[in-house]
Length: 405
Image 1 (cartoon, rainbow, N blue to C red):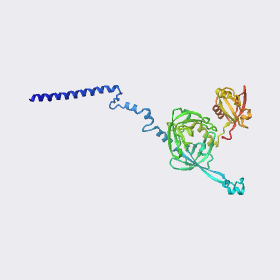
Image 2: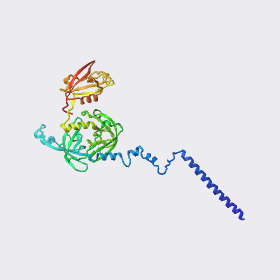
Image 3: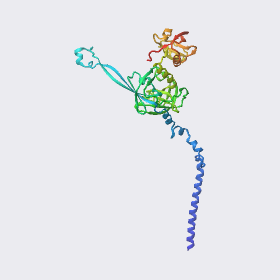
């Protein structure tokens, strides 16, 4: 009787062993299938860190790592970035009685007793120190017409600033503070080496938030002030998507090495993520003149102009209500001639098309503006124009632009 029981126990044990063996086989089969669905983890030989080093130098890790290049760049410009507060008092004349029926009844509707009223306007901007003696570079619109300029360093010290020079045409200004001769100086780079896609780091005091840093890239180069919507300036901006807000004006735009490549200047109110900076190479040349002379002399011709293309001229010419027929060519169309200007004295007329200056073909308004800007005061330019079906050669002597507006 004991043998059947032993036999049944052995049979149950054999069944359990077979089940365990089958499970082991299935487990190893699964391990063999997995590598065909996903790449295996890299094997690392003890002491060999070459593979790990490659992984650590991936683009994302290199750009934003534990030792960020942004931190290094901002530390390099350091305490050279300043905050600029301005005060300006304006006087308005108000009429407190003009809307009072009592005074109207006794003195008539023509009665107007004017009383002066003063109002104080406050402004905020940024700047950066370019010389140990206390020269600060900023935007002209930050300090223009200010009665009082206060410069605040990053360490909290404040100094009264004296505006040494303003140039409205390029929107640049130099302010002097007396704070000793050992101030930190921002390292100036070269905007001529900047390329689209380079890192762009904006530093300043937007909306009163001191020492703010934003990161982006250079979106494009040589964006003309006319395209930006600032027709009274003569600038080709660096465009960036680094966040720029009111209060950033005058602050530095840095490259990835912490060098100043531009001066944050303008934003488009109808767009997000688009800001504009004055190239530092332009600012360097203007700053020298402002420090020396307090102003910059800009030559001008005295025309309002528009880039003309054959397609644009054709659209005008097929319009039955067009007051003028325009030659269907490339050039610069003269929309208006400023009275008593060099262009008016030389005989330029509304409707003329400027084709060449000193033998060089002119195909855009920006090109003509840059050509004139680079010329000398009093220089005689040989200008080839087309008037109707005829071409003419005129001589125009440049004069100094007196009013940027």
